[in-house]
Image (cartoon, rainbow, N blue to C red; front, side):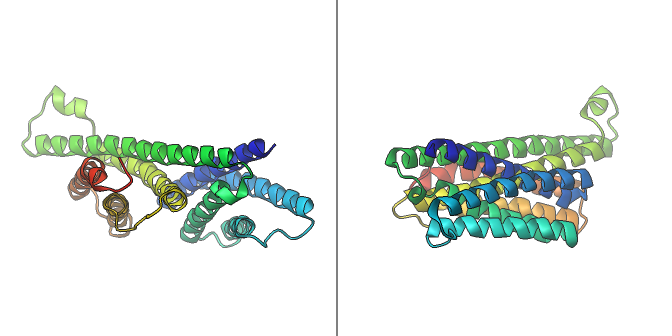
Length: 273
């Protein structure tokens, strides 16, 4: 019974992650369809969390906020409720997105908290699953960033061919400059929220599993620096309106730093491979 409930909690977390991704797409592109999908996914999460909360209330015979785990559950429920209300009443996309990121982090803490699980075996297995999810999400984001890097590289090759007026089949096969730039932007828009959520899960795992977790660990600093580099990419693109060659160079530089983080900083870390 406990293990079945845990699976429902994990499903809730997965739906919440999907909701954050769609909210980020809406945040970038003002895509109302993505906003509607995100809203309904989050509504399902809210329904599930409400059910879990009521069930816990019936089970304990009190308002379940007296323990840390119960408090986290209620806090996550409050944040999700506020996010839904803001989305419907105020339509402030920036606040909705970051409220959901915080709610996801709190929900992850609650879902994988060892104190919630009566069996030590279940708690240990959940820690392994959390690590696996963290690594999988990080690698998925790396895949999106890799494709974005390729599109930026093709953009620079195409730009160079056009500048030198080297017409031919190679030019046509590379594709249109605007399309290459847009594809790079879209793929980064997929990779960034996945990396953000993956890092949040990694922090949850480290706090619960690593004896001497340090924010000054090489891989931790490197991973959040990668996040900052891609975040600045969107700042330059959306706020400053920069496009084209400059963004292609920044994107390539960000990806090269990602490779340094993956291959070098991982070897310097105390708890990463």
